[in-house]
Amino acid sequence: MQVELVRVDDAFHFQASGSSEASVSIDASEAVGGHNAGVRPMELLLMGLGGCTAIDVILVLKKQRLQIEDFRVSVSGEREKIEGTEMSPFRKINLHYQIKGNVPQEKAERAIQLSMEKYCSATAQLSPTAEITHTLTIEGVSPQEIQADSLAQ
Amino acid sequence: MQVELVRVDDAFHFQASGSSEASVSIDASEAVGGHNAGVRPMELLLMGLGGCTAIDVILVLKKQRLQIEDFRVSVSGEREKIEGTEMSPFRKINLHYQIKGNVPQEKAERAIQLSMEKYCSATAQLSPTAEITHTLTIEGVSPQEIQADSLAQ
Image 1 (cartoon, each protein chain N blue to C red):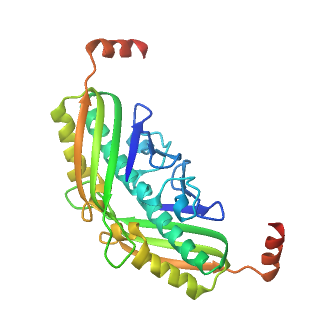
Image 2 (image 1 turned 135 degrees about the vertical axis):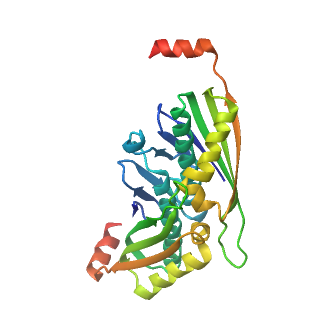
Image 3 (image 1 turned 90 degrees about the vertical axis):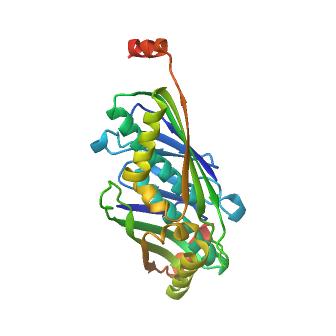
């Protein structure tokens, strides 16, 4: 797997690309001389983790033919400075899954567990250096909403 | 630090955002039912590492008033499956820095070393699970190019 980063201004703004057409803007904050024109590099680690597990969970729930209306993940990371350096990696990361749909709580919990323990490569990458926890809220949909949805399709 | 991922289709396409206005498209490959409309989650880990160290290196070289015309980083990761799971985290990552400018090799090497050992939080996050190496190429600029550049500014 390979990605390319190309600097696009005279400071810290980079465009990054990988195997898809999509590109990612990366930039430093104004505090260090950047223009805030892209995401922070450390935010990308949280986004990678969130995207990885979100795809797993949706895959598992889809296999069970469960209806998902909306799916959001908030990923928050607590950083801790390593003494004698300027490095502050994440030491705690929480994934907050917010699912809207016809999904029983225990099936969502099981899907998350499978992602954390069996499927998600980003979890395997990050869990040795950061404790990863999760929370979950499910907002059900009424039978009327489901029917209206089916009719609209 | 917190990021939000919001699903934007009925499959695996997410828009992720953090502290800047920029958003990141994340999607799965067509092989698993995605639409390839965004970067892969594991690519984001490589982009985060590349962006983190690129910003460090530029900061160090800028402090020494060295002129950088172009700066690129290719990040390649070798993944290895964890037996009994579907997880395949990176076990080797190489950062290939390509700098164009009036930058002596030893100063660039020293800047990279400082990033790896003292500044880059993503390195601290990932180096316990992946061996991180680097390569470097520098393309010099002629005095004429520098002068033309100064005049153009």
